Image (cartoon, rainbow, N blue to C red; front, top):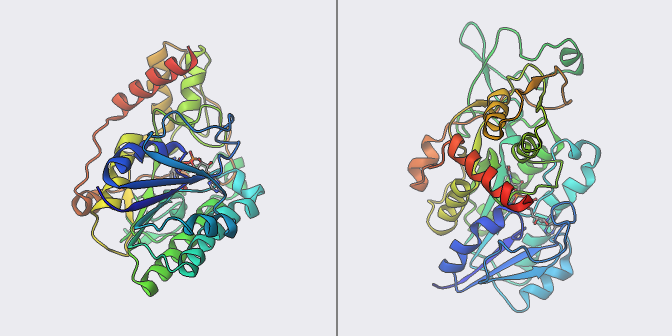
Length: 351
Ligand SMILES: NC(=O)c1ccc[n+]([C@@H]2O[C@H](COP(=O)([O-])OP(=O)(O)OC[C@H]3O[C@@H](n4cnc5c(N)ncnc54)[C@H](O)[C@@H]3O)[C@@H](O)[C@H]2O)c1
């Protein structure tokens, strides 16, 4: 055990999940988190944050916070998790998202330079949102980027791009073309860190996470976490409403598998500028997800309602072969196991 690790946003869902492994691997782990009220309705240290982790209550966008911290601690490694993560919310609160996700990161980088405290590595938790709709294949086998579904298409109930078949994301094959402000800020964060890291000789492993779910996720933040939202509805015997035709596709990856990938990238990973895709590698429709959760609780069958959310991508899943081989990582939890574990945890929280 040696060295110091900073974890920005370290009191959040993912920060807590990696905290024990980091506390066992570093002499000192410092979580920097402003305990944002949307995530932390009770402004207190989360019970799930490992006791070996020091928590600094501070805002990553504030240069004074960084100056005070770096006066007494220097990181060997930084795990950069702090972010505003509401995809829908980012459309109407773009400045808030850009400020934390982009300026928060640049404030950190400037402070590291100002204090001559460059770490050897900064790990970034990026997002599948950077891909937008990603790449699709047309009838002639050509790869096309259809961009965002228009409001008119959605109002007509035209959910898919006619004649096109969607492909899984893979950072070396699929271009990032975000269709949300959140996705754009995460891509900017990737670009800023990569350019800075190459200039200063700091390694910047980037992990593009798919839909992370599992124990420890917020049960109150209505802007993220469809899985916990569905589970709470089904638990109360409600009919889960399913948007569009139920065939929106996502890759649901369990929190312990994501934590494992981040810890590996923090401690071992090979330096590369190609982002890694972190998912289960399995594409699941929202209707299937809702059915499994409804069945678990004995709730009525989910109802497809044909509603839509402007800006939602139709298809998001990924290939994980390169991530598996480079990080020596493998997702362990099946969706069934993960949902059982999450539902059991929710039951205990709400009992
Ligand atoms: N959970 C997912 O499904 C998912 C998917 C893709 C990417 N990600 C990325 O993973 C990272 C962590 O996500 P999470 O699910 O743990 O989110 P989370 O909201 O649970 O955690 C984020 C933490 O950052 C803190 N924070 C917010 N603004 C801050 C600021 N200005 N200064 C300091 N701290 C601040 C919050 O208080 C919170 O504890 C984010 O960068 C997110 O973009 C998450």
